[in-house]
Image (cartoon, rainbow, N blue to C red; front, top):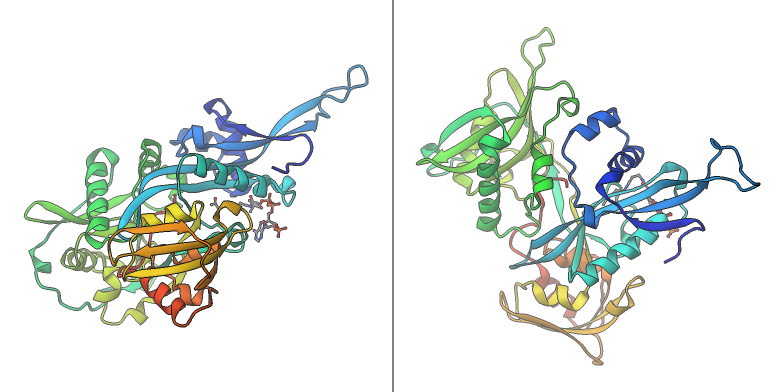
Length: 429
Ligand SMILES: CC(=O)SCCNC(=O)CCNC(=O)[C@H](O)C(C)(C)COP(=O)(O)OP(=O)(O)OC[C@H]1O[C@@H](n2cnc3c(N)ncnc32)[C@H](O)[C@@H]1OP(=O)(O)O
């Protein structure tokens, strides 16, 4: 691992919390004070949180015996969440959710991120986490490390009372509108979120899996509300069974011409389209509110099917999850495929040579798959970043830059990799 002189990787511990928060605030600027940041739950898993310490000259202390005093400074940081059951097409596997990647602005472009990525991949392989997944702060960063943009999200601004297609049984639901608290709604939200993911079979739909994530998700500190009200929840139930929820704040405005409020949603989940219809019907007709601003949504979210005129909701689409295959044969054999497949892939990987070479991927449609090294000639040539992009079944391998060596092999492979439901993660970790 190439680190500049006087730099070393260190395992971070809770005693260094303030340094970690300070560095994170250098990486991701915030108006919050260190005391405020320290007052809310800390989301990371400490034994997966690694930094880089630099030993620097300490000008605040006079030199003794001619030697320049040194001080230690945390200059880079990353962590990952342990997703033991990360949903991929037709299966679940252990994945690392890379997060809190930051390098102090005074230490950028010296290879610190590169060194941390090497460390991260080595840890994933040691822990049998076959894929690494992340949200990219900047889409320009991660392709060079073998990640591919594997999912998309859509953001909508839905006008008040936007017409929706009728859905049978939507009127069988009742509504609750309450202050949202972890004590009252934590279990309900976790349960409906899980059921929504299972019902759709949506790759990427992972919940808050650690106690630290759960505590952070529900913290709702005043300094992070941007002047808006505290968190509220709408729950839709059928025969007493909660089947959908929306976490939200109402942003009130009265510019002189009358009420002009916005319902700002934080997260929405529904187990079926009837519950979704009841939920969105309520969200788009709240008193004094003129529009609903959605959070990230799957591009095939129920609401995109319900709206009679989705164009009026001003959709814009950006990248959601990025995926990196850290262990190619493990990752490819643990997911399912939409068609039978028997193909030889020639994989290039500039960071993890163990992944490079020819792999024979055999799969039964929606059944078992195997991936074994072979000397057979390749049907399709792919970089590991192409595989990452196609891995969750949303981006087509045919449009990610893969090369076809035998007739129709790319179309067959790309078809097998696709999945009926778009991959998506509902929350930024
Ligand atoms: C999963 C997450 O947590 S995403 C969060 C990422 N963090 C941030 O955006 C916070 C603000 N930025 C930073 O902290 C840093 O600038 C980082 C982490 C993005 C980069 O750290 P550095 O130590 O400067 O990167 P490093 O010197 O190792 O550069 C590695 C390569 O990435 C490139 N790179 C680094 N940052 C960027 C960027 N924002 N956009 C495009 N390329 C980048 C470098 O040019 C270099 O390319 P090369 O190998 O072709 O020469």
